[in-house]
Structures are given as C-alpha cells and as structure tokens.
Length: 376
Ligand SMILES: Cc1cc2nc3c(=O)[nH]c(=O)nc-3n(C[C@H](O)[C@H](O)[C@H](O)COP(=O)(O)OP(=O)(O)OC[C@H]3O[C@@H](n4cnc5c(N)ncnc54)[C@H](O)[C@@H]3O)c2cc1C
Figure 1 (cartoon, rainbow, N blue to C red):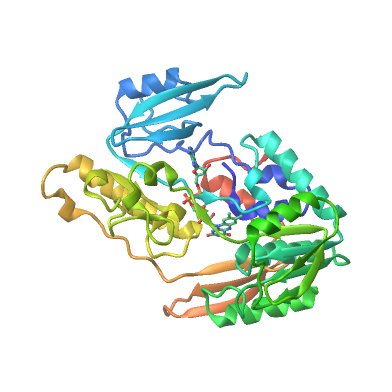
Figure 2 (figure 1 turned 90 degrees about the horizontal axis):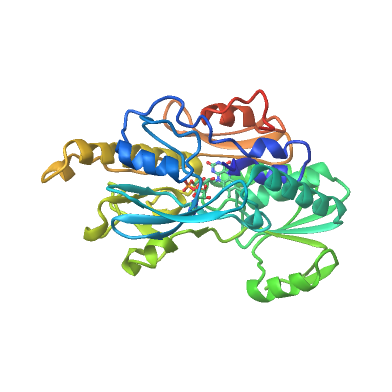
C-alpha cells in the first residue's frame, strides 16, 4: 500500500522512500467480525493467488487490478511474481467502491511494486536535486508541501508557487493561510496569487519538449515564470469510470459518484454497492480521515443488510454526516500548521514541529505492519 501522505516529501528528500510502501501482509491480522465470503469463494481466491490466504480467514487482501464491474461480478487481473497475468471473476453480494483518485503529477507514474516504486522516487529526488528553478502549480496541501519541502531542502534553488486564488488553502479558514504564508515567506518561497497556467494541455505539450531544460511559462496575467522543473499539484480526478461507464447517471456534476446519505450508490439498481472516499460525492472534504469515517458507516450498513436483510432493513441504516474539516499541512521539513477542533468544539490553529519522516512508523502499525524493518 502506498502511504500517500508522505509521497510528496519522500519524492524530495532521500533515505525514507522505502517507508512509503506498507506491506498488506498483516492487514487483517486481527480477525474481522465480518465473514466476507463462503469457504468456496475463499478456496477460489486462494487458487487465484491471494496472498497469505488461510482457509477460514474472515477477510482477505487480493492484490489485483479491477477491470470491469457488473451488478453481480467484478473482473480483475493478477500478475504473478514471474510476470504472468491472469484474468478472473469474483461474484459479490455487496461492495464498497473506494478507488480513490489519480495521483497528481509527477507521482502519477508511481510503479506498483515496492522496490520499483522506491527506486522511482529516488529518480524524482535526483530530478529535483539537479533543477535550479522550480515552479509548483496549486495552492492546496500538495502544492504547499512540494514547494516548501524543496525550498527547505535546497535553500539556494528558486521555488515559485502559482496559486489561482487570493490565498492558500481556500477551503479552510483564512488563519491557515496567514500561518502558512508566514512560513513560506521565511523559507523564501515566491508565491504568486490570483494567477494560473491557462491551458494545461498546451503546457504539458511544451513541457514534454523541455524535460531537464529551462522553459518559460506565460501565466494568464501575462507574467512569465522560468523553470527547469514544473510540478502540477492541481485537479484531483476521482477514479469513477469503472462504475460511471456502466451507469452514467451515477456521475455527479463534481465528477464523483452520487451516493445517498447511507453511502449506497444513488441508483435503485445499485443500492448493494457503496462508494466512499475520494471517488464519492459525500459533501466531505476529500481527505483520509473523512474516508475512514465513511468506511465505518458503509461497513456497518453492509453488516445491517446482511444480518437483517429484506424489507424494512433499509430503515435501520446509518446516515453519514461530514464532520467539520480539520487539516494538518507541513510547511518545510520540520514545521506543521494545523486547523483542529478543540475540546470546546471550536477551531484552534497552531504551528508545531514535526519529524522529517512524518511519523510513518505510526501508519505502519495502524495497518498491522511491523515498523522495525521498513525495507520489507
Ligand atoms: C500525495 C497526497 C498526500 C495526501 N496527504 C493527506 C494527508 O496528509 N492527510 C489526509 O487526511 N489526506 C491526505 N491526502 C488525501 C487522502 O490520501 C485521500 O483522501 C484518501 O487516501 C482517500 O482514500 P480512498 O480510499 O478514497 O482512496 P485511496 O487512498 O487513493 O485508495 C484507492 C485505492 O484503490 C486502488 N485502485 C484504484 N483503481 C483500482 C482498480 N481498478 N483496481 C484495483 N485497485 C484500484 C488504488 O491503487 C488505491 O490503492 C493526500 C492525498 C495525496 C494524493
């Protein structure tokens, strides 16, 4: 599993990249109370190469790529250690669809296995190290983290952050902007507000011709920014296609899957499928802790439907209500700026110190993995 939160940081500084990839091996070491399949299903999955599968296991990780979804089956491909691929089908009664969103560039090309992905991050670090002028586009958490990490790690490089609004993190309180912009200023990041790269496709074509070379980008205002590395931290794109291609009415105007408050897909034929996280239109900000809260609601509703299925059980399903947004953003390698809800229910803002590894060991433990050797 790629620990997304640390990828921008570990794409800049070296020595930590292996920590970003957490093995699935012990994800379900604590037996779940939900029996996800019959012995027959599990034997079939074992035959198809599910890792660490044991007869009687109550939950199982199957490392694969889902290529097709119908109302009753998924089709998926697996790749074995010797590179052989296979296509398989699995029948389901209920599904939670949590396919997330595409990673921003340059992370979008992240390889699937740990050693290739670690090596690839090393390659991104080398590209950052040899660049002299870096332009980062996007005033959200990713843009802020990329720009401030690069400037903190390489103070002599010229780093420019281009932001389309008049402030950073426009979805959060202005106090966050003030705290972050103060840190950005002390690091020496040049922030350009109220401006944007007007034609992203044309920009991408130009960029492909200038890899490793200086390029001039004219922003919408006419201002020109020179850079030999450009990082686009914009435009989250949810991976909804597997379902929206089968049932186009599921797609919301915000490019996510429409869900009911119970997190079931908002379509009578698809009420046995739940969507959560970045791919779902839940009204919540698209961050990890919101996805976790949605997972609790979706799994509890599936248990209710399985145990008390039939007419009337829908009435007992839980509804999801998005919590008030909180956020922590690093600004530079050791500073964290936060907006949290305090004990009195009101927001609190703070600037604090954080370790360079962003507490990866904690995340390993949370996913059942042993953090004493993170090279595994
Ligand atoms: C670089 C980065 C940093 C972030 N930092 C933070 C942070 O500090 N704090 C925070 O709260 N949030 C952060 N977020 C947001 C957070 O990571 C997401 O909101 C959260 O991961 C969403 O969870 P999800 O389950 O919807 O999707 P994801 O966590 O993206 O998981 C989706 C999974 O589905 C898999 N998948 C997709 N398609 C298929 C397919 N066809 N077949 C099989 N598998 C498939 C993907 O490989 C992936 O493993 C960050 C996001 C990014 C990109």
